[in-house]
Image (tube, rainbow, N blue to C red; front, side, top):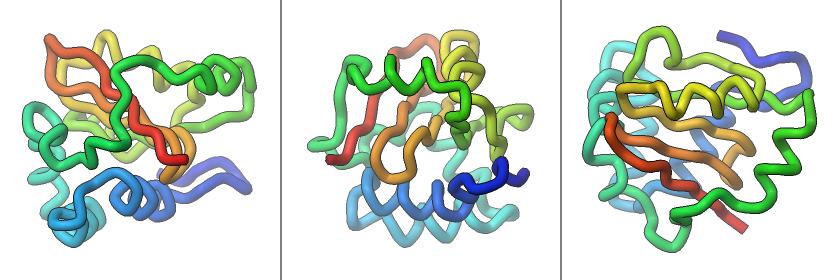
Length: 135
């Protein structure tokens, strides 16, 4: 699925997410699998239970950053989703709509908001959200 014009691409979101938030020992594997449609499901399955182990702890917040409230008010923000749900995976959605998928999503989902700077992750239900922030 293509992003709206003049927005970060799927490849930019994936590369930036992995580079900023995934532990060094796992980066190559995540990039290879997320970019290969035949092997992507292996990483998508990790979203349900194990992804948090592969994230850099220094980037994790357990509460929503203040900057999200300002971004939600902007109508032109589009987010990229990585999800263990065929209807959501590999899609671009308006930020507000993407954030509304979190509470109802039964499977793991990552919403890349600003590539490599701001993302949110929710494991399989029932679970809370983890915000990922890179300064």
